[in-house]
Length: 355
Image 1 (cartoon, rainbow, N blue to C red):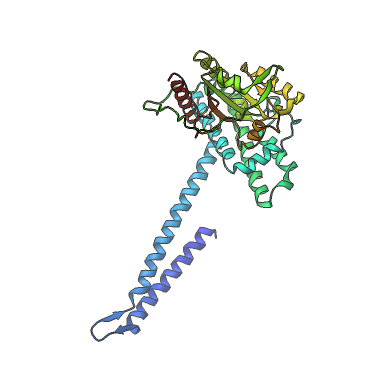
Image 2 (cartoon, one colour):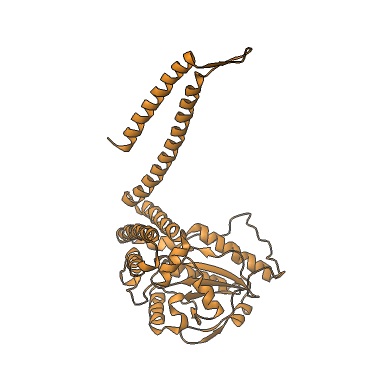
């Protein structure tokens, strides 16, 4: 007998007892004040009603939970009939992966900080979920038993999603390019108000670093020389990060025509790690991304700022004065919501720069 059947039997027994109690109470238990007579026979009936209502509410929640689980399982097992359905499923799975990485961000930050820079890159066929599982296993002493269990389950789910994504991409190779062609337009009615210039805005931490070719880069010159600067934080073995590189390169070309720019910060390359720089350049080249990527010292203000980023990829919009505009955008901009939010902040910053 399953748990649902046991619960049903217990419920029926409880209701029967309450009905029996109602009959007994109605005959032997009553209170008289001389003017009014109270019969307690209805008390068990009221308790029975409350029991039924509470069980119904619990049943609704259980059904909703089962429906959500069924929906996720369905996404993993459904077989698309054509490229259009495959593209929709591909985007849905990417959203699920981003959602997992956006939850329990403090724990994922620990995982990312423990990531082994020497591990094989996802570009070489490494399953991102397997990479996370390896990293979690190597850093298990950093987590409680409960945290370790949660991270392992989440990473396993990501690994399963990655396997399904690979299957879709191999069967429908055309969806890869289509998934990059997100709509970057701003929704009608978007708020284009000018950001305040009252000192309340957070400054992007100043830095003096270099790009991946060794050319010096100073943040004050970078920001002041552009109407808007988009700063994208990523790392080499982050699949969602790598997946949006082509989209970011296209955005950089659009910004250049409007007096803006986009730069990347690969967190593995901080302090000028030569191996990490070589790997980052290799991934960027494979994705055809030509926009500037920079690194700086990990013990400086910008380096400390970077270590406090909880999830990847994360993107910031910075104005000409070095102010951070709006909230950081967590997740790949290949997703519609992130793309629209980013475009809104960009347009807002450009409008403010024009006065």
